[in-house]
Amino acid sequence: MSSMFILVKDIKPQHQLRAVRLRAVRVFEVPEKRGEGHSSKSMEVLLHDEEGSYIHATVQKKKKDVVKYREIFKEGKLFEIKNFMAATNYYVYKITQHAYMIKLNYRTEVKEINTLGFSFKMFRLKSFISLKDTADVSDKELIDVIGRVIEIYNPVDKIIGGKATKLIDFQIEDNA
Image (cartoon, rainbow, N blue to C red):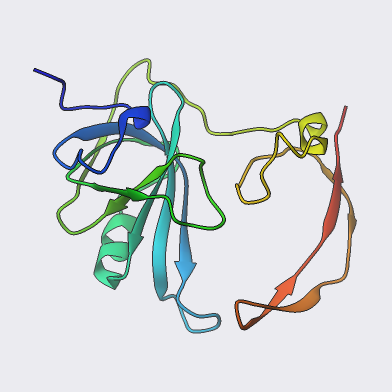
């Protein structure tokens, strides 16, 4: 009989009855609309398994679900997650390159656990040299970079997706 727990690399849509052990790397909420209080459209979580493989989890649509998980997920903590759905990673700007993402809902069980020896991979760092190689970096994936800001440019107003948006450009350099 196979284990109830699977690794991130093995997650597929048919694994709704399986469970995963994952560490929360980043937890953030996407606001409903700018300037309208603290209402969230979704909650996004970047997680990794014991092998260091990353996957994106999302809580969408229902405000009460976002509130529920806001109290549970904390960066750096380890969790067992059961009764999740795996869906195609359809975001244009991806948090991970995994083919699937985890969708959490009212049936999903999330429990904080303590396990000795579970890896702690809180950053997905890219070197400045690798950033220069366009074959090594996707402009559609979020990554971590450590550097020093040496110049900040004036904010620019742009229309993105039919909405007015303010973008700021800055330049960083390697400390080495």
